[in-house]
View (tube, rainbow, N blue to C red):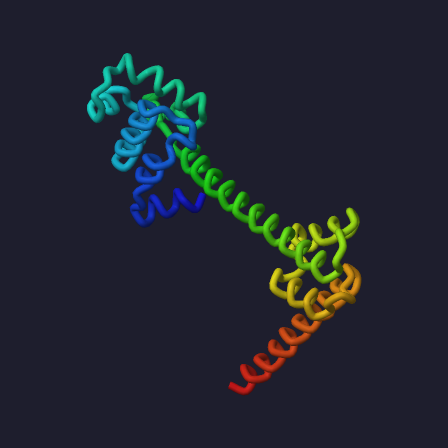
Amino acid sequence: MVLKRIYEEYNFDVEIILIKEYKRLKLTQAELNVLLALFSIHKKRKTFSLNAISRRLDFTQNEIAPLIESLLEKQFLSIDIENNNGREREIFSLDNTFNKIENLFFDDEQQKIQQATESNVMETVNVFEDVLQRMLRPQELERIRNWYEEELYQHDNVISTINLKGDKATIGNVEKLLSQDKIADVEIDEKTDRILDSIYKKL
């Protein structure tokens, strides 16, 4: 968990994220307050105590108990029994909270990527239809979508190649040119690697 590591090693204020995103994380205000109290306690010790939470909030222990139950059910919190020198104590973990925050941000990024893909596909289709002066066929639309979903080619290269071919552009010849450029880029990279290797060997 990257976020947990940043929190522990660099004293990152994860509470700011919770305060800003608690509604998207499907937490109530009361659950958020309890969770923030748990983070405050977690910095000093990992022993679970209703009394310790109550001291940090304007809630009674009877009010806190169902909120703890809710956080457990929503999987923001886990509590385990630890046996230390014959004495049992409850230890709590907030790892699930870090996971939920990371998943929330990951979903955000995936949505941005999806939106960018849809925008690029739409632009490419429009450029193709402009130069060909006709609607693209379903199989052509599918090929274009595949370029972007499989991340086969750079969007700028796709647009410039279509414009280069003009009214003679087809899915096939544009794809062929893009593939040739991709192979050329790989060959250049390999040549550069060989040159760098030879330079390093002389050092």
